[in-house]
Structure formats: C-alpha cells, structure tokens
Length: 116
Image (cartoon, rainbow, N blue to C red):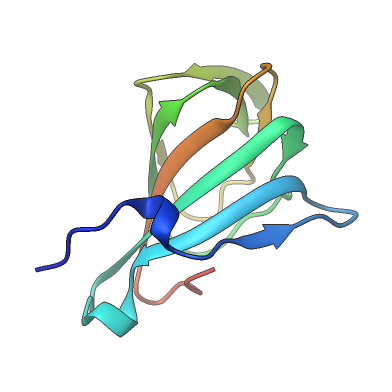
C-alpha cells in the first residue's frame, strides 16, 4: 500500500510552445509496482494549457479544483470541480485553465502510455 500527499512528489514543469504553466506528477506508477495503470496529477496555472494531442489509449480524468475547458469532440467544453471526463482513444484533446486559481486534475492512463 502507498499513501502520500501528491505534493510530496517533485513536479515536472511544462512551459514551451505547446504547453504553458503545467506541472505534472506521477503519483502511482511502475516504480510502485502498478503494472496496469498510472495515476498522474496535473496542476495548470491560470491561463495555462496542456498540448493539443491524441493517442491510441483512453484515459480518465477527475477535476479536483478550479475551472477550465477541455477540447474534445471538436469543441471546447467547460469543466469544473467534481467533473469526471472519459477521453476515448484517438480523440484530439487539450485542457486549459480559464479561471483565476490552479486547475488541478487527476489523470489515469494505462501502463502502455508514457507515465509523463
């Protein structure tokens, strides 16, 4: 068993031409013996965004704090605290923070995906 506060994991920061103001943490992964899934926590700063991308695996997200928008099904969709998102394989998607506080989300991906 593993119980931690996610903030105890050192974040990887993403600030480039595709992603802005994103901190990602692998909180449960292969190093923990998790052979089927990887759990990541992302913090997106106000005005920040993940890259627009698609991949062959599904993933699930839970909005823990903040407000923003997620691009999916060819349009922007509002998200907020408490929302759960299923992103099917090969669907182009992106998340952006439209609020004034951190947008924090948990993201679960299968073991075939890169952990971060």
